[in-house]
Length: 67
Image 1: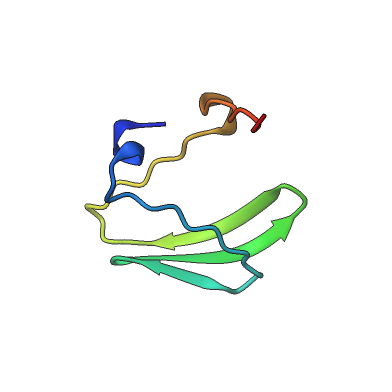
Image 2 (image 1 turned 60 degrees about the vertical axis):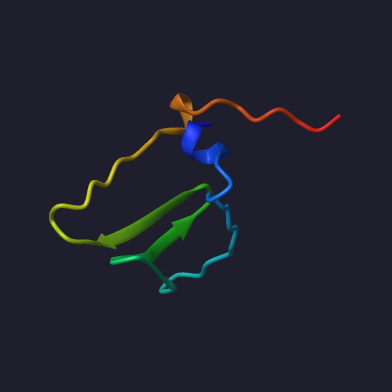
């Protein structure tokens, strides 16, 4: 979890998507093109100066389960 995730201004939203659904976040458009099992292909449209970075699952910490 980054320090930005801990600020009061940060929020987390969960949603279910179907193939063809589009998310618009600021000026970024994300379309779910294909989904099979645990893999999904998304098309991302953004200004050329927008940084887009992929964090692989192996690089993320595993969340602890509630007790």
